[in-house]
Length: 269
Image (cartoon, rainbow, N blue to C red; front, top):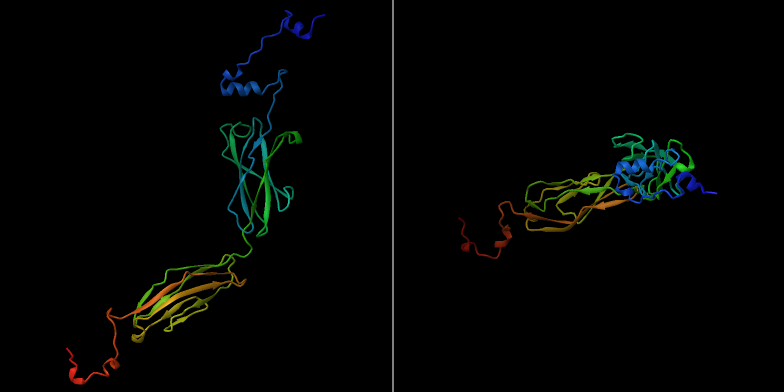
């Protein structure tokens, strides 16, 4: 009794086997790999990023972006995320940058979405998943997943500015730092090493004043202005020095400098 193989071959010999399929170009290999010997189409599961990226992280939101490939059949993609596991919540991905074939093409596409309603200062797990139009468990692909942490619940306010480090006598000095708080908290200001001739506003952080002749030649060192929010978070402007100079750039003198000199030795020109 002849074997089935022999019967099908018609001559009792094995059909030839070809091992040089790779000589086909990419398009032909794709077509060849998509068909079973019985004529049925074979589709690979959709491919997804092992680790989608995260960006634009705030206290309550983050944007997830990954790449996917339909592998020959129109597919859908979504993200799973949660503070302790991946299965807490899901959000559909928006597909863009589709290949020339559109949905169902074998070219890569971008899948992105922004998740909101997150808790501040919290770590979240996330991963990307994709399935084809049959949406069966065997047609599902799951990325490895990764994690991110939302911004702190209360960020310290920022303070900036470049104060002048010298002032001429009898000229008004004014420096007001720029301050910003992400939560729009009320801000207060404080100062260390305020010049004796100046005044300071705890509401605006303004350092103002007009030094006089008696202040010429003095230098106040290590002036530090600090801004604080209602949660007691603070930031400081780097320390700076402030020197008072004479109106004509020369040293000043007082009438008492001549008290020990006879008037006959003085000349005025």
